[in-house]
Amino acid sequence: VKIKKAEYILSAAWKSQWSKESFPEMCLAGRSNVGKSSFINTMLSRNGLAKVSSTPGKTKTLNFFNVNDALYFVDVPGYGYAKVANNVTKQFGKTMDEYISERQTLRGFILLVDYRHKPTKDDVMMYEFVKHHGVPVILVATKEDKLKRNDLKKNEKLIKDTLHFDPSDTFIRFSSLKKKGIQEAWNAIYELCDI
Ligand code: GDP
Image (cartoon, rainbow, N blue to C red; front, side, top):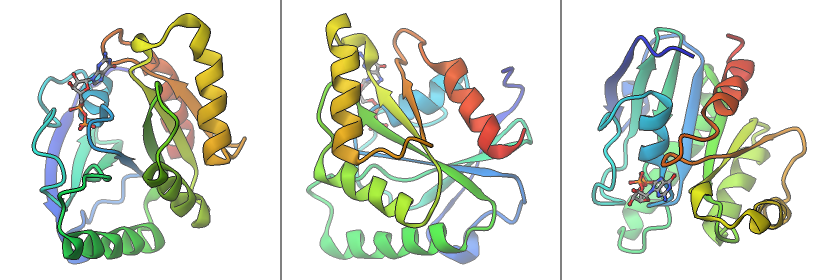
C-alpha cells in the first residue's frame, strides 16, 4: 500500500462537526498508551501525524484523517485513563453511541490491545460495545516485539478468550518498532472498506 496522502482533517466534538465526506471510515480505539498513535503513524508512514504520547484523556474529540482520498481514519481518544472527570467520560460515551449507531460510512473498528497483557475490563467493554452494534473489528495486538516467541500463541489465545473474540473478526500481530503487521492490517482494512 502506497500512502500518497495522509492528512489530518478535523476534530469533532459534536455530531454536526463530523466530516461530510462519504469515504468509508475505520474508527480506531484503544486504551491510553496502547500504541495507537504509533500504529497510525506506522500505517501511514508519517511521523508525528497522530501525536505520540500526548497527555492522555484530555481531548474528547473524534479526529478525522484522510488517507489517499480513499478512506478516513477516525481516531478516538484513548480510554481507561483514571484522571478523566466523570462528566467528560459520560459525554464521550454519548459521542461514541451516536457515532456507532448513526455513522453511515463506518465500515469497522480497529481496536488495539497490548499483546503482552490480558485485556482490561475497559478493553472487554469496548469490544462488546462494538460487537453489540454488529460492527466488524480488526483487533490489533500491539508491541509484538516485546513478547518472547513462546508467548505469541499463548497470549493470542488469552486475548481472544478474554474478549470472547468473534471468529469472523481479524487478529493482527503488530509492532510499530519492528514494522510488523502493516500489510496484514492494510489487507483487512481494504477488505472492510471494499477498496
Ligand atoms: P497511544 O497513547 O495509544 O497513542 O500510544 P503511543 O503510540 O503514544 O505509544 C505509547 C508508548 O508505547 C510509547 O512509549 C511508544 O514508544 C511505545 N510503543 C508504541 N508502539 C510500540 C511498539 O510496537 N513496540 C514497542 N516496543 N513500543 C511501542
